[in-house]
Length: 285
Image (tube, rainbow, N blue to C red; front, top):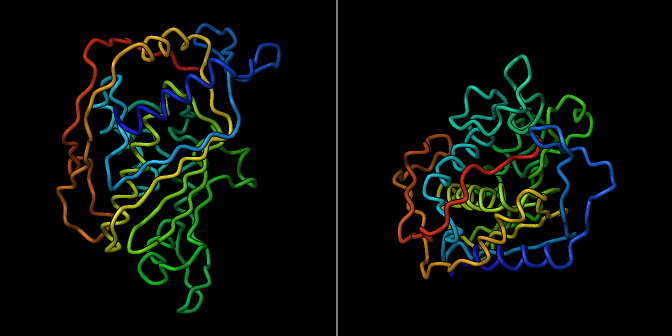
């Protein structure tokens, strides 16, 4: 069983046993047929992963293709700094695309904006991603290596407010640690997705900064399971996890973050429970 399996199982059990019900609270989310997408949730979850030990992948179901799509999305946001759905290979953002083909001023749009930052070398103009990369190389002891996508001034112009909205990067003993802050988490559809993509991003940033990977700490504000997902979650909780320790291999020795491509990444030593067939997972909008 991987650490991702343990965290997923423990969090899901806590939600099912002690979660708050959203019934009667006038929820925003709807199913495709228009009915309310209610859920059970818990508040303030923290899951931690040792990335040097293993890559955080759930083995209760097949994630062999999902990991590629997750990495593609993180590159779309952090590397391409794009809000155009056409520039993303998967279709996970199709439902949020506006008439202009973008998701509004969200995610990559915010990372493309440049600011004037105070550095040891004086005032420098760059975007948030380049500022993180600059500090990791030039001021790694800083406790201010952070990003924020929750721009209150432009929330009204976003088709969906950012779920994973903030990061803090810390270097200790030559290892890069990431704290990821997320306001809301759909356990079935997104939990494994977010941990895989931000773990991969940590590997990329560590490589280009001459560091080793450390830990990923994932803080979740509202952690929930939707009503129509409960039978699927219960099915996953009944199956046997695999005794494996997945590793991420990057087949690109670059020290330039903007050189990475999806095809550069390979997962080794991974296996999954082949008895589980969840089918198409309904997504609340």
